[in-house]
Image (cartoon, rainbow, N blue to C red):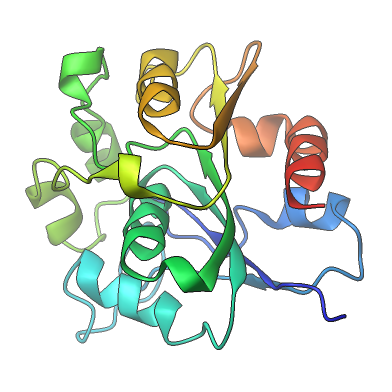
Length: 200
């Protein structure tokens, strides 16, 4: 029986390399695909990409059957939207330090936009012009979901993961000690083990 493909979605940094250390630590025979976001971070611009809807279409256009979605930060908003709109195409979900379409400020999250703009001055304007993603009815997500958070992340604090855990019908929360917003990079082996167990 063919193994479901894993689609790796980065955050607003946009790099297709973000998830590579985790992916490399997963079984080599698991099919994997890495996405990068045109115009975000240091990625080349594409005038056809003007917002989250265009990025979501990029992903769904590559889904020719059920997949596992592994997503960080802003990528988690896309993954949650896809899981809601195309439940038949998402077998399992991994959301790492994401917002998932919830009220971040109300849960103690710091505003990342000024620091992002300093780090990526050439990034597309829309990524920092949008104040907040639209609220999502995450309680309708059917896919079993693994939530991975770091306990030292000011951008997406553990309270966000706990909020999603309380609302998602089938979810588990794993908190990584010392993990920041880049926990998937800094703790790649541990994160890979958690993901492997969830996707097995």
